[in-house]
Amino acid sequence: MRLDSTAGDGRASVQVDFGGHVRSLWYSFDRAHTQFIDLDCYDAFVIGLFPEAMNLGCDLTVDGAVSSDLIVGIRYYMHVMRALFPELKIIKLKCKKTLPNQGYAGERRTISSFSGGIDSFCTLLENCLQPMPDGDRVSCLLFANVGSHGRSESGYRLFEKRLIRVQAAARDLELPLLVVNSNLDSFYSLAFEKSHCARTVSCIMLFQALFQRHLVPSTNAYADFGPDGSMPIADHLLSTRATQVVHDGAQHSRIEKSRKIADWSTARKWLYVCTRDTPDAGNCSQCDKCIRAMLTFELLGLRQLFEPVFDYAFFSESRTRYIRKMNQLGIEAPNYYWREIVHYARNNGYKL
Image (cartoon, rainbow, N blue to C red; front, side, top):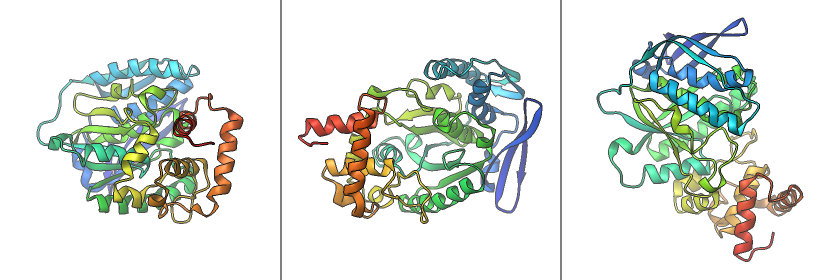
């Protein structure tokens, strides 16, 4: 591993040989965090790459050291991924040496992934504002560029625009923000949705000396578990003795989370669920994720609370389009959010 630093940034990198083509895989971050990186530990790069290696069906050979407990965990994790995504292959993970299963001494922190969405705000609500031991309380936020913002220059520009919004929310929350940029997505042909937990966790595993826990806000509830790149039955398998990965929030449905965060003024001010590239990195109020959130708040009688972050001017037309799409594709299709909304509406006397 190579560690470089400039005036403001640090960069950790390794050389990766995929099919005879050698390229550098790197992660960049605030220079102050370079002190927490163990140059002998390749855990982050292994976690970042193994889902794509499964996609390609090629073994992963590491010319460096990997935590022994992580090697075991990934072997189990691969079987879960294979069960959910049959096109993936079980591969062999070969390491030059293993690191002993030991933690780090001294005070360490809990960090949570943060996008400004409903899931991440709910995780903060329950793991930062609620009483708990200091070491388990969220004391730092992660915002990473590992594929969710798109590729090439347009993806990086969207990452930068969204970062401005996330930084503002972090200031209101009075929590430090760890920003990690990487070219990891350029190594992937496997969809981000099928690998997003491993990609994000890889960023934190660079800093095991600093973080004892990494909270991964859940996408679905336990009852709605299905094919996804983050899994309540498997995310913890990406842990090491030093840093525990926790899938958080699956005890709540998306509707329950939406109700919970509605009482929090910071969540109402900074909520961001959009998938589109808008000029101000705000909610477009027209994509499916925006309409789904707006519809949920309407059903809960909370629409007025979220009007500052959504434009309801064309909601009636968009609402009709979204409901028509739900009905055409069928609520029994594997879209848990649709089923949840329809069942809630029927049980509470709303007609969709």
